[in-house]
Length: 130
Image (cartoon, rainbow, N blue to C red; front, side):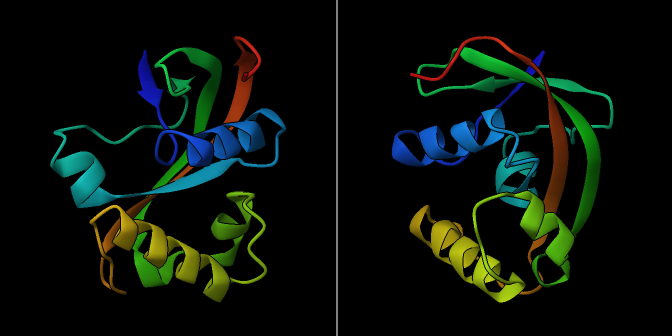
């Protein structure tokens, strides 16, 4: 089973994982080149199950992919952004937060940057997050 590691280790990952476990976060967005091409990782597919990992690489839940779309950063929909469950008040706020995050991790984006919009649902909780 492949895995899903959200955000960066530490507080960001703990917060995002908690949102998934609460059922608030049902989507995420990755960078096609940085997260898939450079890692030689194939795209997820609907029906695939992924182990949601904590900071120590332990599975805390199993999620099932319900949708995968490759698009550009500027074409990400409000429906997808809202499903990320991170409390963004608008699509512009979502874009601002994501631009700042990717800048911080050394992967700046522009409107034409290819992204992967991944939708999922929790099918099993392995262990509660500490």
